[in-house]
Image: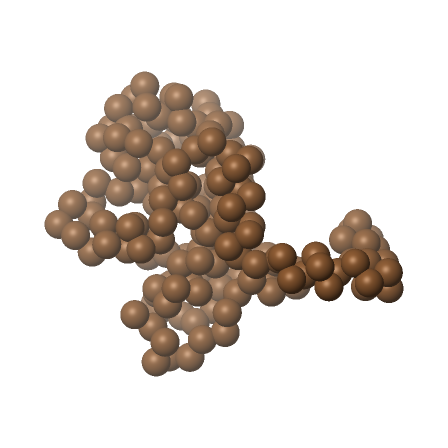
Length: 179
């Protein structure tokens, strides 16, 4: 049994979660990740604008979620990478593609991607990457802000929630909410 499955009910009984859950927002998670990981955190609207621009091919997106999460949906053009990939393995697999590119890593909310981005940053910059950034708020922020996600069949309205706890940060949307 996972620890959170024991602690969350206990917290509910003691009355603590009213405060805890009132502060559990995507904004608060983003702020904590930005404090904890000193990598550049790229706002989703900045990435969306860049991907729509003439130099969109200068961006490489790396989805740092498990394959099942990626298969459910991802940002168009993203490459799925193992969250536990070493810097050496990352360079071996992608080193020839990263020169002059803006490398943007993302996961559900930004923690796993921040960790991997920090891990590969120095080596990627040595090989000529323009920069290494984490997408602030990850695919959850991207989706919540109304930007499209895709699966193998095309655009979809589904994002893998990681689990029930983290899935609370995803906002339900309808087709007319898409930008």
